[in-house]
Image 1 (tube, rainbow, N blue to C red):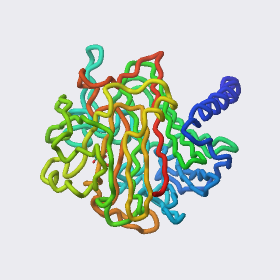
Image 2 (image 1 turned 30 degrees about the horizontal axis):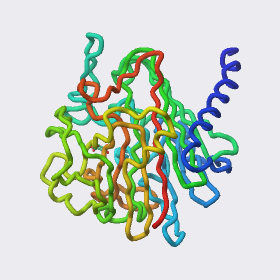
Image 3 (image 1 turned 90 degrees about the vertical axis):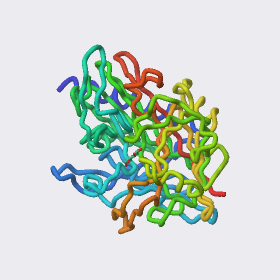
Image 4 (image 1 turned 90 degrees about the horizontal axis):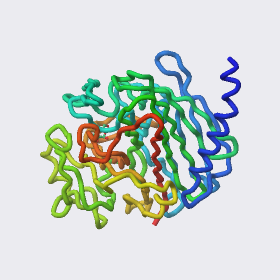
Length: 387
Ligand code: BGC
């Protein structure tokens, strides 16, 4: 009892410090309080909440504690018209259902695939769920995307922190992990996502944000008319089950070359008959995670730019991570989401900043191993404007 009382102020101070660190995109965090609304209840009766962040331009980001998930993001087009640009559901029951393909969620303990759900650390082999036969995908049967996080909205700021304790043995992973993810909306229309994690045993940690974007508005029929630019010369080719072969190869001469802006649909047909069924590839943005925090991330420039020519809405993505998974929604198959909108095949795409897939089994890839005494940190900025 005493311990809890003693730790509450400490926790608050730590969270405020975290927000102060986060608010270093180009804009200050918006000075409006996050308002909190009910968001339904999970099957086991736990109440979920919706946190509404708003900036002085009227941009809004709605987040829920289930999966530390971005539910909606209302962004202006070139005429000032707002649209919700991410896929999602109207309440928590949708996120708990089979229709939820990680819409907007925080994915972990290890995002993307682990070959055959297996890895060896210090001579011991760990077997995880093979929920994407024959591999492990996005943290297993009930990864971080499908868990209730503890929410801490920050008074007087458009910011909320979610906290999760992932116990030793959670989904087969070794060691207890304490993770936080903080979302901050700035007055410069930046949605900043900052992650931190510690572990009490060596364990792989690779978190990502899994929003599906359609900048014409969630529910629009296709994302294939969007232009994409990816600032990467290299990617990691994968086998028939989407596990990287270990090679890192140039994008030159492949449909993956987005170094100059290109419409997503222009060359996607060349990938129809591959096991990815379209774009579902990891770009090797850099050989190691970028050190130096927010300033270094912004100074390095965007890793990708996504633009909808129709509305002019443009997303610039900044990240310190070595990898960027570009996924063109090939497995979307008509789920009904917010407001009854239908999410058709390739009607949205994901740009997931993270470590390389299967890095825990590939010594030549940047390490995703977190050891006691060290802190996992990740910083990603989604900056919006209209052209
Ligand atoms: C993966 C896809 C997977 C999808 C699930 C993406 O991050 O790259 O292969 O099907 O998540 O929604």
